[in-house]
Image (cartoon, rainbow, N blue to C red; front, top):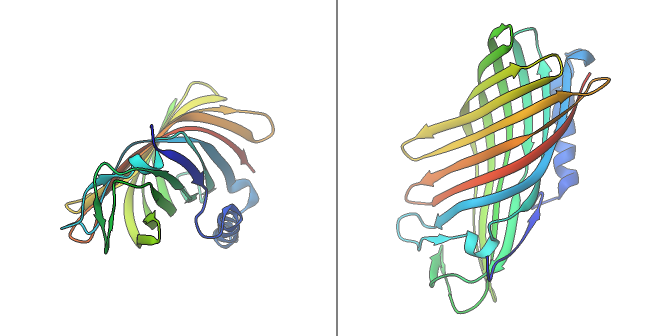
Length: 261
């Protein structure tokens, strides 16, 4: 990426211990009425790459620029946490914590008006991209026969996003905290009792923007309740309105380790 030098922090405000703490508290609240054998915990991690990250703030009269010129395209490390509870044979709840922050320093291709400042193309600029999400998903399995298993559902996503530019003594930031409803699709094909492939999609669309988080993974059952996964995930979407224009496309190479009680 030439002038770009990137690094990733798992959480921008209070670090990884904060995300783990929130995850544990929410697990306790949701799982209190459930039995231990209905609990599935999983940690996912790997590298994330960026093929697009375009920004214009304000959305109506700011300067559009590629944030990747500052943060780079990756690879950068990431981690996610999952907790799944089978309410019965056909229904489940899933809690997902997906903190993500990427920052780096590079040069802009031209002078950029970002919020109330103009950032010069003549000097390095530090850019920070945060897109952390926290979700609660309900899944209903409508087909579970032979090798195939299919489910539909819905998710409530809390979006904690922020974009920041810094140059010399100048600093401007645009944050966005909001609740977004998503549709959910789940598909699984079982080769045998130990090996399967899984499709897991959550997404939404409106005239003002869109969001899609889709993963395709292979799973292998290990001994004594443990299992492992590996695969590909993509996260794409953004918003286009008078206040903000931002669209990103991220690609994840993922591995995961889980335990079913």
